[in-house]
Amino acid sequence: MPVTLVVLLVAMAAAGAVWALSRSPKAPDPADPEREERWLVRWLGGHPHFGQFVRNVDRQAAGGLMLVAALAVVFATALAVGVVFDMVDRGSGLARWDQTVADWGSRNATE
Image 1 (tube, rainbow, N blue to C red):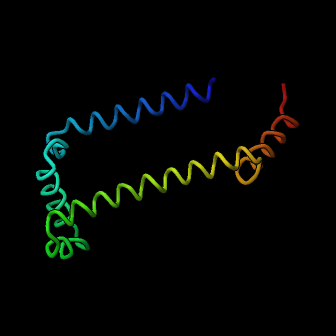
Image 2: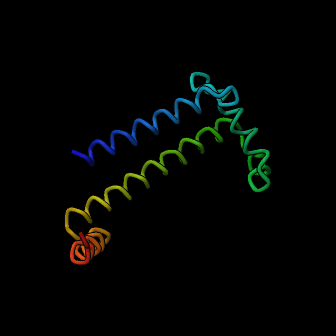
């Protein structure tokens, strides 16, 4: 139950942060994809490494690139969470180290 409560609180905090950031007047409007693409091209255009690349790519390609990058981040995050859950389920990797530290702590704890 405490783990579920912590996960719920973290999710609520993340949702609150996303909501607060979306309320910023400088943030792009998700209901207007063309405006969001223009914002991304302007933002990347100011970056020293991506500026030249963005000037040579049209808006739709930049929007597609943004979508691919977002999906890659979601996939990598899901993969990392799945690996950690698998370690906990099998008692290997990080979970084994955690159990070792917990055992050491219980043996060396004082009143």
